[in-house]
Length: 177
Ligand SMILES: [Fe+2]
Ligand SMILES: [Fe+2]
Image (cartoon, rainbow, N blue to C red):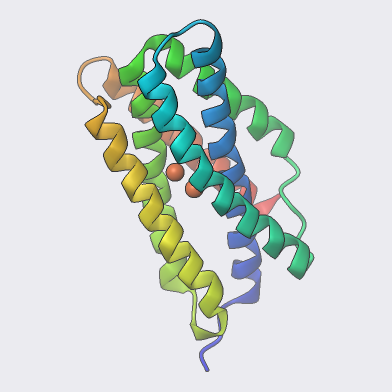
């Protein structure tokens, strides 16, 4: 049986746990705005549904962290804060920005998960299958976001770049610490 690199597997689980938790926090930030300053029941419903998937993803990685005794990233409190801030801020900018936030993050995660899938061997079958499923969920989220108004036109072009850069930095840090 082909073996996966154990150090890589550990990094994958640590960063995926952080990322899925970050996704929940982004949606919590968005819901905070939608429960206070912004009225959009339709958008709220969409976000609540996507958040259910992120919770499922996060729970899986949390169990893996416990089972394998992996140290979660030390920066969870920082990612929590930044996630809520990004979610809240993007939603204040309007529906297009809120949905772009999902689209931009999911586009980074799509590549991130694909990269992991390609590195996981048959000794990590269950982990690999889950990441394949989660990646499909994230692609669905991306599609929903574009359907609901996400755009990269005009000023949103810059927002997309900022969110993508931020997500990539968070990924690189959370793999290691
Ligand atoms: Fe997710
Ligand atoms: Fe997602």
